Image (cartoon, rainbow, N blue to C red; front, side):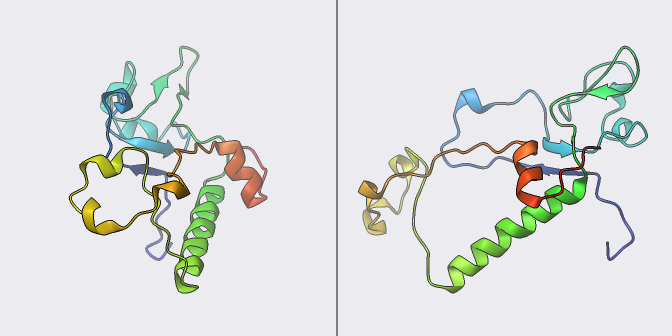
Length: 145
């Protein structure tokens, strides 16, 4: 917003320490992108004729695009959700709550395990999936695009 630019997508590189072969994706960029016929072809020239290797999107026979990377709700919902998660994390840290809770098996390869003092009886972090509808409900902006 500071540079008069519009955000059209959000992507991430999964850099978990406990990466498994089953976690591999068929696309380079994981994330979400707005469903805009002018914007999507800019991500991958292959979208003019078929499925993209860059994002999880492909052209529809009837025109337009389909795919799991397409955002179904206004992008502002995702911006608001990111702000809420970030604010919550900052408040927890400022209040002194810092709990080590690694994902399952990540301690197996960690070079700091012997000095970490992690209490494995408190459990491990679970991989929770949140979908677009959940984000929309959390942000209270239930308008569909």
